[in-house]
Length: 518
Image 1: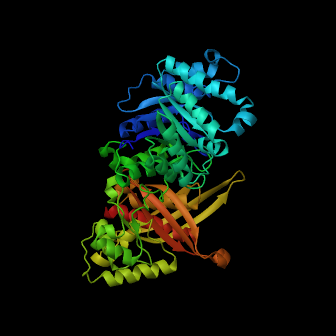
Image 2 (image 1 turned 180 degrees about the vertical axis):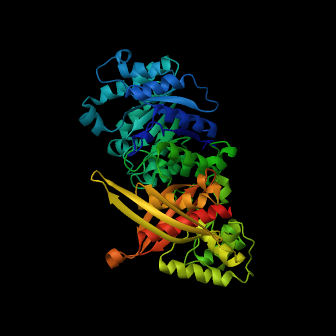
Image 3 (image 1 turned 45 degrees about the vertical axis):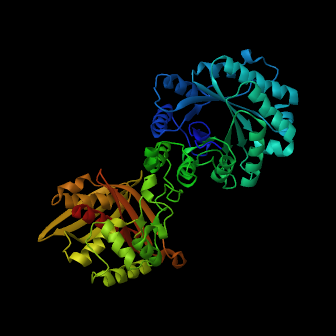
C-alpha cells in the first residue's frame, strides 16, 4: 500500500452540478487558485464540450501558472460508431490544452445496453480508442469507470474487461466510481481489492454520499491499496453530494497517518472550506465535520469541566490542526466551567473562585428560561458579564420609541422615532425605513451618532426571528437574533419579547452598546 495519496478535486465540475451551486468563470478561477495554493494534486476544471462557461474557463486557465496542481479537463469516451479523431467532444478535450484529461466510460451492462444502446464490444472499443488517442496527444489520462461497483456486482467479468481495456490503451489511473452512491464500505473494499489484483495501473476511487458513506467508502478503498481519491470541497455534488474532501483530507493525514497535502496546509482547511462556501454563496454549515464551528463546541457543564482539565477528554484532536477552535457554549445546561472558559475567551479576568460566578450562572439560566439564547449572541453575553463583574453604568438609555406605518396609495412607509439619553443630554430623532426594524435601526443610530460618531460604521449583516412558544398564537414570545459588524469583526446580540419590535430594539441596543465597549 502506497503511503502517499493523491487528491483530485472536482469541485468545479462535479461539485457545480449540485443543487444551488452556480459558479461564474471568475469564481472558478478564484477557487482553482486557492486549491492550488492549498496543495491538491489535480483540479478538474470542467467539461470543455458541455457549455460556453467551461470553454471560457479553460481559455483563461491557460494563462495561469499553477504551482502545485495539474489542471484536468473532463469528458467522455467517443460516441458510438464515430471515429475518435472525428468526435467533436474529444477534439475539445485536446484543445483545452490541459496536461491531464479525465474521461468516463461505461462499466455497467445496464448502461451499455439501455442507455448507450450499443454492443458490449463497441463500448470496449470506445474506451480503448479514446484513451489511446489522448495518450498519443501527450496527455496524462485518468479513466473514470462510471458505475464501477454496480457494474461489477451485475457482471464482474465485463466490468473487469472495461478496466483492462482502459489500462491496455495506456490509462495512467483507473478510477472506480460509486456513481449512484449506494454501496457499503465492505463492498467498496472487496471490489477495489479485485481491481488492484488484476490491474497494473494505479487505482483511484470516486464516491458519492447518497447513503452518507462517501468519505467512509473512499477510506475503505484507500485501506486496500487505492492511492488516488476524488472528491469536492464541502461535499458539493449531485443529489446529496460527493465525497467531502474537507472530511477526507484530515482523516488521511491525521487518522490514517498517510501523506496527501503538505502538512502546512492542514491548518488552512477551515479557511478553505469557508472560502468555497462564500464564493458559492452558500451559508457555511456549522456541523461540517472537522471544519464546522460546532465541531469543537461544548455545551454540557460536565463536558466543559473535563475539557478545562484535559482537552482530549472530549476532543479527538487539537482543533488548531485543521484551523478550527474550541467553542464553549452558554445555555441553561451550562456549568461554572462554561462561564469561566467563555468569559476568558471574551477577555474577562475570571477564575473558578470568582464570587460573581454564581449570580452570573443564575442570571443566564433565568434568561434562557424566558427564551433568550446566547450561543449565537456573544455580544449580549459579554454585556451581561460586564454588568455583573464590573458594575458599570450603561453608556446610554432609550427613554422612548415609536414605530408607525403610513400608506400613500402606492405603497407603505415605515417611520420610527427614538429618544435617547446620554448622561443629562437628550437626542430625539426620526427615520424612515424599508420596514419597522430597519426604520428603528436608522433612528437609533442617528440618535446615538451625535454622541458616539464611531457608531456610524456599524451595520447589520443578519436578522433572524424565532417564535418561542407558538401555542400561544399571536401572543407568543419572539426571539430576535441580530448579527452586526464594524467592518473588522462581527458579533451577535439577542432580544426577547411578546412584541417583535421590542425584541428587535433590545438586540439593536445591545449591538450598539457592545460596539462602544470594544
